[in-house]
Length: 70
Image (cartoon, rainbow, N blue to C red):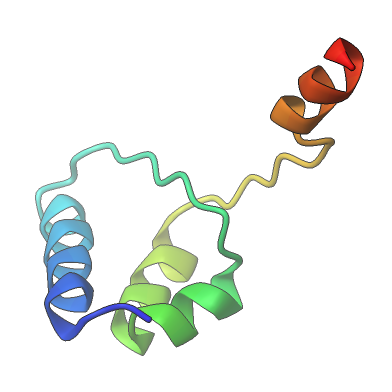
């Protein structure tokens, strides 16, 4: 669960960077639906409507390295 303070800060960060045309990279383990549930519709709308979503899929490198070490 995310606090209202965190929701507000994330919104302010995303909104300010959009309004000032600043390049932004957002890295998260959340999908767009989870972003909307976790933060707010306003954050989701700005991210989904403005940014290109690029998914990186694959194995968890940390687990793979642990498995290789035995």
